[in-house]
Length: 52
Image (cartoon, rainbow, N blue to C red; front, side, top):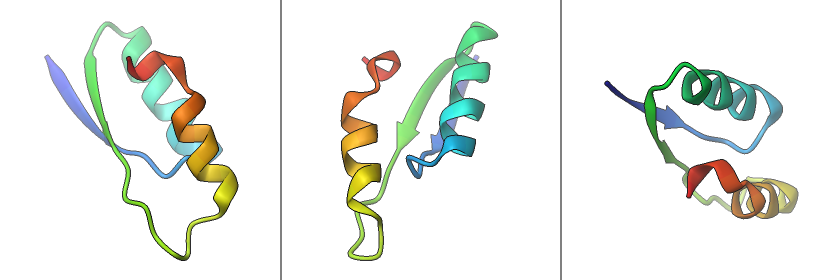
């Protein structure tokens, strides 16, 4: 089974994606960079190791 996660970098999308992965489901995270996104979200998305 596979899932797609619309990943903002905020706590809710991090937690939801992590829970789905822990259930044994393969997750493809999609993140759209935007001028309106906080810079901290970009660094958070890059640092998360469970997407490798």
